[in-house]
Length: 419
Ligand SMILES: Cc1ncc(C[n+]2csc(CCOP(=O)(O)OP(=O)(O)O)c2C)c(N)n1
Ligand SMILES: [Mg+2]
Image 1 (tube, rainbow, N blue to C red):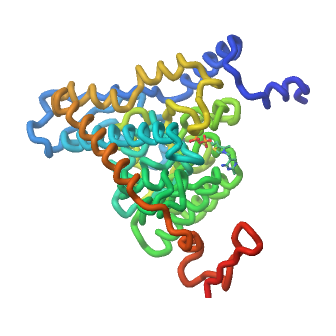
Image 2: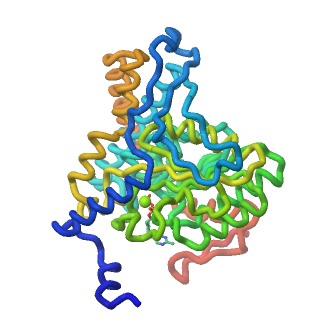
Image 3: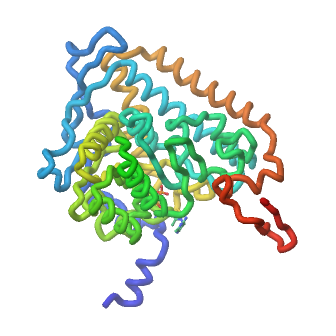
């Protein structure tokens, strides 16, 4: 039986003392020996195979360290290390990642100016996840995630203005200013969910709907390392496998759940192996090309009636859990700096673009400048939007036509009659 003091040490929040720094580096070396290498520039291409044209396809060789497989042998193995792309697709990936980082940086600064209030979780550092996935998703595929949802909202059809206006709580927001940071949706993006883990069974339900209706769409149900130990995750796995649903469960492993390192919360941090009989794939998710190749594989896998797949995207967030967490009390600044300087997804793709002669340095700078201008303009336009009218606070709670006769507000006297 564990002693009281060992239990206390398990429950105590990790502080970056000299001793815990030493154990952190030991833990991270243990974790990295079990995990894919998260470098962002490990792919290569034969220069003679790179076409002049921006639209012609060519093949890129991914690093053999990009993936780890679990029980995929019985299904013909995991993804090939050869990934087909084009110059224009690489430029789209770069441009999208730069825009998403700019948008999140703008949110950070607007929060500090108190123009954004409440919860706000940013995905700076994790851009290769949303963009790599979008590169291989079909327009009709479905996606659902937790609260770190701004880049997915834009990738799935929202505008930058609609995200920023939502953060401001303005009418032009994607949820009409009534959802805020965690609650954003598009026709193929089912949020933006604040209750950790609750989106996973909803994702399995979405996959059931695709199958039931005969729609050939894949569903990507995302959750974090911190959510991965919940019972409902395993219940959703079970039903998805029993019913052979087209569901890709994606554990976005950014190494921390709030301030708790994955090794302190999970008895097995190889999240891709945790589906029991469901096969799994671990992916270097700091490399956008590896994420794109893995998503293409996962989509084809699940749509060829092979059932669900558990995919672990190994990534890293540079900022704190949310804007109220400085993010430096439970990990060292050196750890963050090491990730930024050696595994940044934007810098990694940039170096490949230059090496493969896709576009030159000055064109990349133009993209960076245009992304900043686009975000700045979206912020200014969002600021001009009105606050939602008070009476609209009663709308969009129930599906139209299914409202009860009346609803109580915060105060007993505050009653709204629908009928
Ligand atoms: C059911 C529930 N429990 C607790 C919380 C508080 N909470 C918010 S985020 C979080 C950690 C989740 O970490 P992870 O799943 O790794 O996602 P990440 O923030 O790293 O993207 C917790 C415990 C919550 N929102 N919902
Ligand atoms: Mg996490």
